[in-house]
Image (tube, rainbow, N blue to C red; front, top):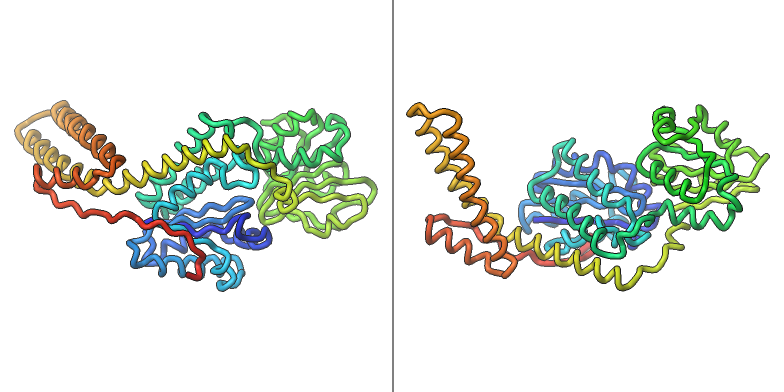
Length: 412
């Protein structure tokens, strides 16, 4: 059974999201340590913290939710009761539909943003690295990537340039007379930094410098044609606009000289710039919370088209999940027969060509019925496929009940 616990810009403050993001790297491993959780993938971005779980069954759902709340509280320092009031719990068909919408940018501050699909993909890669993913989560996250591509290619939301970076620069442009004459410092060398470079150049910025707290400024600068900076304080002193998009650097007021005006844009979570910097004379500070208040309205037709695609993808995923036990039972039965024939053939002196031919034949035999099973599932006839397996092969398939759809807070 799939679950999602989500705290995002719609139901939580940016201060709370910042605290949650501090514990993101270790959250998945700790969650899978709980007996009732088979797999966990944690998605942490600048405007959301979400834990996707696969649990044994509905009877362990509340246990898994409580364990997740405790872990989120322990790693973030946020009181567990406060988290329970804020976090929304999704289950059943709501989980894949929510993830598909998130991956497609439909739940972002800037609807249709470019970066989120990559963040979803990297969340799955991190879970694989620490061995916390599961079969159900793998299927769902891979389908999320496929769905986001479909939304990008088939709707107007796929237009280039949708991102928090570009929105922030749009807002900053009311204060910047000429980007070509502006010295810009980027703090950070990750994907957001690369996106920022492209967005700045689209506006005509030419003097772009980079500082990296982890020492990666030189290779990043070489790749993107920038000037690397060795010290943060020195780099700030000569910059007009400072854009931070890293994980662990905080700019303090004492690092900002008073001899020139500065415009700071903080795209980090946890925040990269001490709010006290914004109170200095001659300084303006644009942070995520302020940027989110200026997010543009959705293009209604494009948004509706994208929602329809997401809904269709979620329905297809749910249908395939309902017939998966029958497909697995059929595959197990056929492959067991093939293994017997391979062993028998090898014992009679057959070579590797015979073994390869038998295994190829197994794949051919499995493909058609498996595809038909998914077609039947989309028509609401998954039980007919299972009944056919029992009638023809004598296979008993445990039927999965339709997953209830539920959206509630964690205190329920």
